[in-house]
Length: 603
Image (cartoon, rainbow, N blue to C red; front, top):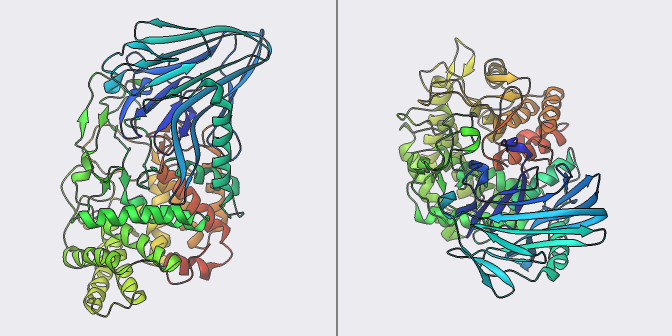
């Protein structure tokens, strides 16, 4: 079987682990014991050795698929000459406690019911631990089956045979009959008779969560769906946000730009917290900030990314996997955790200020942790770093890093005022903040090309500079900002709505696609520049590029081909931000006050 398009994969989540389902009904990605764990099903990265869980209906083409409204429950409809069937795939959840409102049942549910005619149904489960490096042996385990050496348990109402490392279930079903597979990944699997109740509870749980959102503005359907995706990418035990549920989906088909994104990046921090609060999901916002502050308590300097448990793993390659569409190497772990990225501090402090403005709940000990990081940037802002894009080369004076360091100092000054901290060295912080601002304007803007640039002394462009007006460094209609936006569109666009991050040599062979985070941030920048018509046109183009299930990957090639890990949290976060900015486009004063964090930040 060829590899399906990246954005054709469906995304399932129980907020503890995740799964990806191919258009033909095969589950090709499932990590155990959680979303950052071993991929026992990894056919996504190798058609031969990667584990899989297939479900096929003889004589029927690939099913028509959709998510049941306001859920992450995938509905599949098969139709062929011999009959028709409907079913669902889901990672089951139920309502939880106040501090963890969604509780994972830790079971993958696959159901199919024949609605017309007679159909032959076949399911095959072939897990391979070690990211596909070794097979399993199946043994009977009471009413079900156990894959030895793993936590996987399968129960089904179909007759089962064992074929090597594969468990095969097959039967001919008439109209009104059904087939159920329950794959537990925590050393238990429920009875197949419970499948309908699991499905109903899962639907109710997701719909109740979604109904708490109160946004009814521009692009409300896309925003609501993005919120569900983001909730599915949030880890139940800590509140951490997965950048994506996958590793090594390529930024260039056949290339080497393949990275593990099953980590939390602090650059997503402010966007996530603001999105959650503005969409009516305050408790999840609180949980994420607690996770973030817990990291701040343990790290100095701050790493740009951490694992969902609060620690990182070394990067390594898996040579036994050929990679998606031959894109090797496949990597697990992420070496960027060892880099110095000063923008991290700005994102953390921006999130903290917004949290305090929204809730007033920051405690004195929490502020003490944050204050330490403000002081770090007051001392170190004149140093170079590796930059937000994690270019694996020498440190430079990246302009975006300087801008976000300014954000760190600016938000620290404001927090000290809000919290009445008279002992904070606010006057010194203010002097450093203002000196930094003056330096960026002087050294980061190139009069010859009429734009802010990637780094001091460079003439290269950098799409991360689209965030300058979004964090209030300069007004969105400042002539230098407008000129930078226009130069980025002229020089980094590969399509009217698709923007690359940069064109500079980053030390890796090949090229990547357009970065969808930057493409949606272009929308927001145009709104703040007073050009909502252009912004709306680009937003509509980008939204129209979503995969068949409304999911967005990390990147797209100029022809629209999906690239990179999928679904990508920061793409969906930037979509939400762009929609909210377009919704408020008629109130420019409020938009600028919001970007500068000087006005109300309530929804």
